[in-house]
Length: 273
Image 1 (cartoon, rainbow, N blue to C red):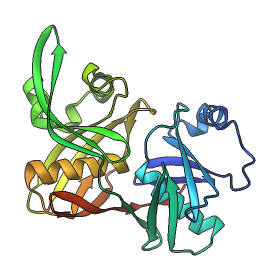
Image 2 (spheres, rainbow, N blue to C red):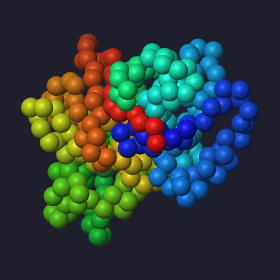
Image 3 (cartoon, rainbow, N blue to C red):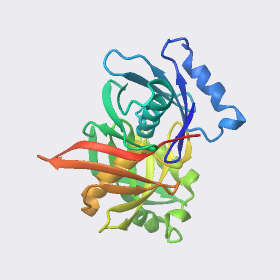
């Protein structure tokens, strides 16, 4: 099966009988096919002793580290369409957590997340461009996958020609920050953002994703990270709407209670390709 979650494209494989063992080789083989050049990740649906199903997620380069929020939503849609037909509430195990998903309408799916592991809205990264050094202020959020969040205004300080997210050389800058020495050895996904509307809580985002090693049109965990950062830095109200590169909106809901972010929910489209 092939599904797209707000522009994040996946192949989903039914492995409920555990017939596929060398998953990395299968991932690399599938990712190398011309028809799959836009696929961001490959999902193996498997049996779970703790939930309805288990999602075993791989990036297109064969790595399996980190959580995939849109992958969870697409898994739920794929299960409801093809395996457990018309089931609307599906629990999915992933990375030792249980995620509750809900089919809200024909192509609108939500998934609940546990509180973030790490939230640091104020980190400084030393950058070196054109043989001169500067510091940028950004955020670091880990909701199961590590993301740094860099405001457009910080990039403008480095290069005055960068006046919008469209001006960003996403591969060059994304790779630079993804492998920044202060984020190694794990590295991080990179989110470049711009506040569109404080009143309507809308933030525009572009994402360079590790494992894909390129820009993706949307990111579920990236949208969660951007929403948390924007809540803290821009004092936005939940729900926060993330305008992705696919021109679709991913909506992030949560509550802030006793100095903790709780009951996070990611909602957006999931469509069969």
